[in-house]
Image 1 (tube, rainbow, N blue to C red):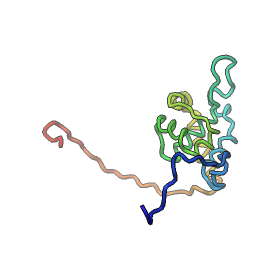
Image 2: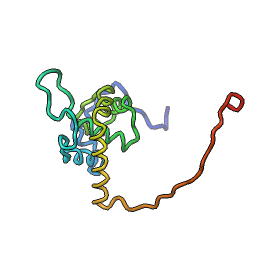
Image 3: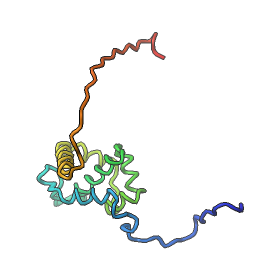
Image 4: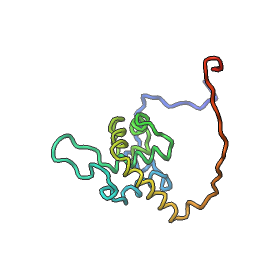
Length: 157
């Protein structure tokens, strides 16, 4: 196979940078997510589990799961199973979560248990964007169309 770019041997050992910070650029959006979540008062917003329990298995801090939730929202990854996969293979998410990889049940329970607090965080994020001048007033158009659907056995194609 001459005149083609040669692929590297998969069995070859390499020395990748051990610091994940080397892979994340200074202008990467995950840095904004990290700073934004760290600046929030999670207990004031109503998140459960901010104070750890004295017994039982240690849980993930709500800030870790909130960072993952916001990352998924910005990158159109809504499924908790897909977010679990991203935490294990995506370098940005590894950097954001500090190499933690919560399972899909933990992510889904976090969403279920903290719905009101998540709404407050989203409202705070929109407020921050308005303060920074990232959002401007927009025109809203309302369409008055009405559609009637008939889907019986005779018309089902």
